Length: 238
Image 1 (cartoon, one colour):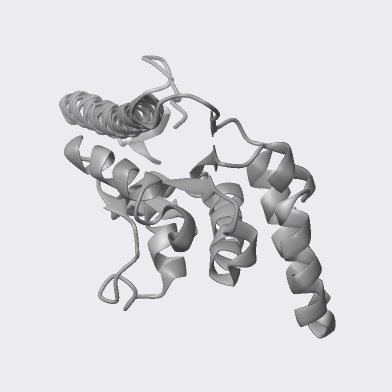
Image 2: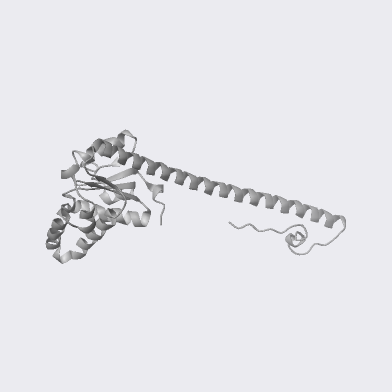
């Protein structure tokens, strides 16, 4: 699995049905994340869509999937979802589902409005049913993940909870990446130190042997390392 945090341009990618939540919930979530300094790709203007959306997803550390009533009717949402699942499974991307106006079992088992939407897709894509099956599989995989379900609570408090969770995951991801980088750097420095020390010791012993050989007119034959055995022998594996 590749380390997905190395190449990220965005902290969060928002996957949502614009007609359902683009001007209310998702827009409010975007604003709340932006105030926290989180770099979010919302993708609801032409300029942001110039680069293929799959690249935007791959360049994000976290994907938030907002399941709403018309979500499964939108082919673009479903195509993005397939890419999100691919990034989750191959790059370790964090995926967080949000159930807005729907029950978790609906996308999970394609019930209710999701069942109606997929009935239409199966008719429209009768000759490419594999595509519909991939949508179904991706929908279940993401809706099975731990996420957030807005029931009868206040939307502002709900969004605050989502932002808090995202901030925590981003901080944890950054700390892990920094720790890994520091460990690798320390290992490289240790290797250089041991190599330099070993070289210095061998050079010193070579000089001593050569001086002794010269003083006693001894003819030294073979590599100098054969004379070092009585002194020490060590191996370090990296």
